Image (cartoon, rainbow, N blue to C red; front, side, top):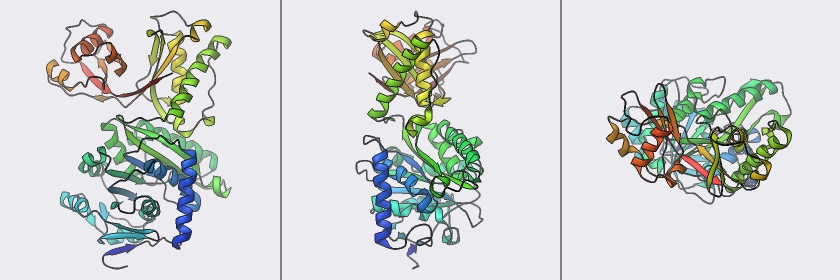
Length: 459
């Protein structure tokens, strides 16, 4: 290893050291992922990718990277965070070298970005932290295959406060939001449990990731719990949504179910971007209509077998389902928190909108054929901070924000679709107060307002 270039210590161990062999392997993982992923996915701001030997985790890592590459997305910079597996230290470490090589090529380190981190006092230079660490190196072949000219910020995380890890992303927030910088969280899931227990454990972890419940994630869930928790705290503040791309464990490859390691892939999108490609939207509309039809014919709710659906539709999600007849509302019910998978949430809320909305009579079979079904997928609600009503109104974004109004005794919610009928801020705000059962001119010091965004589509 030269003083300017760092070579992979795990080439020939976790992945092939021979260039052509490794290139063919990475290309096969990406091609397989391309066949499994819809072609019209939005490019993410961040991904979770596993870091085991490519035999075991390469196909899952391929899902994460292919989802980011899409139709040829070019990131200028990648921030890769890995836990420290073999070297105990305090803080977050960059290497001293100016570049990092794998058998597929070389990434120049982002000089300005690394200097920004060093000047902030958040990071140190430690070659020892990188010398025997596979968490960064297993990501490089994918990066070199897809973005050979992108700059790299490779960070190995030791013992560090989650709040400090979160600040890493804040320092690059503008570039992340503009789509110039991709965050890569390198981590595997549970380790060395029996297959059945591992599947249960990893499903719990998936739900915490998709609910942004970072406080409950620890080393029993993922080896990279520090980087992951810091990232989840960051994205929760900005209305991101997490999409599950795939989950397996080592037993799927080796057949040995006695001690397995879990692998998962996710990508993270800001609420301004479409979460679901058209094929998944159509599937959810079908589930909503079929759920109502089943209830009408059987007088009971259908059992939705989530494992038969694409992993993305098994992601946790908060949804509303609305029913309209000739443009007029016929029912609308949903939840603001992601307590169920997307497919379960849509099925449950479709039935509730059809039969439990007290403003309307229950839907009949003849009516169902005439109804248009709309689905809204909500981002995580975030509080608005304001000094007075004028200040609040200035923060509300027309045609973008949905709002939740709460007092100790009243609560009301408007989806963003309501802007179609109440198209100015003051009308929207006053209408929300009326829906909550409050006077139009109501104001109180204990009033709380949360905003969210929604991806809305219909048949």
